[in-house]
Image (cartoon, rainbow, N blue to C red):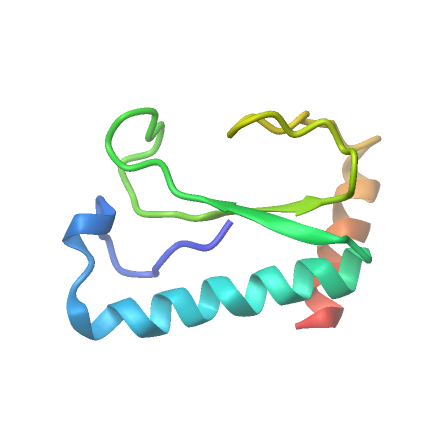
Length: 97
C-alpha cells in the first residue's frame, strides 16, 4: 500500500504538485513488488470515496501471477502463514526498493 504522509482524503484532493511524486512512488513500489516477489506483474487500485474504508488516499499494489484467479477488481486474498512470513515478504519488497 502506498499512502502520502500528509493527510489527503481522496484522489480528487491530491494537489497537482503532488500528483507526479505520488504516482512515481506507486510506480517504484509496483516495480519492487514484481522484483522482490518474482511476480509476473501487479494490480494497482485506488478506492475513491465508495469502498474507501480508510478516509485517506492510498493505492493498493498487489502482486499478480498468471492464472492467479483475479476476477475483475477482486483478487483472491491470501493470509500470511504467520507474522514471520509477513516480515519476510516485507523484507523481499524492501530489498528490491
